[in-house]
Figure 1 (tube, rainbow, N blue to C red):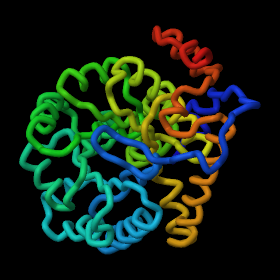
Figure 2 (cartoon, helix red, strand yellow):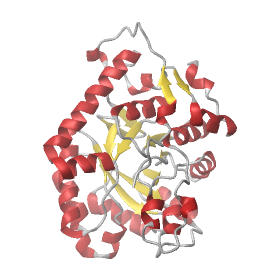
Figure 3 (cartoon, rainbow, N blue to C red):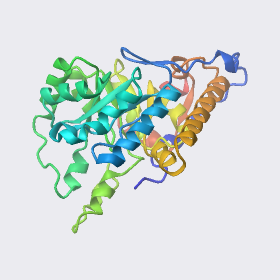
Length: 333
């Protein structure tokens, strides 16, 4: 269940540049996420965890697409495989298919250091996502109700796991207050996972008799969350996800300050309905769109894109202004 264009990126407009002074061949899509070097700022974000043969097939196909297109890929939550040996193969298939690719592991904030290390080892992960899903858990009939100690557990994982740790929301956005807490424990990679994509409150509410409707509209839009985090922790590598449905959404997210953009549901939909070749064609088209838009803006690199002028208006402007964040930094750069 997705929101209708609620990611906030429709409130972002580029300032047209009539004299960009570059050509398409000058544009490079390479980006860096901290110590990780990615050939594309686009990555396949976490989707499927556990689930037997069907999940294994999807992960195998996504890994093939990631390999062909040169994308990083995150697996879904590995918690099931840490508890049930038979689920391991639904994840290990990703590394078997894409031996040299950039792959992110994925665990919940309830995980221990030992579980984090086992998740990394399972798929030889280059980085590890820790997902935050408090609202989803509260709405889920059988979900967690106590989130005490999550920050301390993550601090231990960041210190001991041996790979970059990406803390990721699942669709409700990261606030500046949360970003500060994460920075204080050494987290250098934050995926904002903003409101605007799959709404897990709505999904879980469908399973309840007494629906908690107030959580259905809960969260910070992806656009607003990118600004909240980048302005609060400018040294962090910020990844953008949450309702990224088009190449235009992705380029806007990068221009706001993200170093990479994660897409999940739209790519899965194409894969399931049309197959591997169709998804490869779609990603290739996104890359071509990136190149054309960056050319029009005079941006040779993702770093250049983060310096082009843009205007923030509408609800996103109002939100950011009320939160004490500086919107003119973007329009006058």
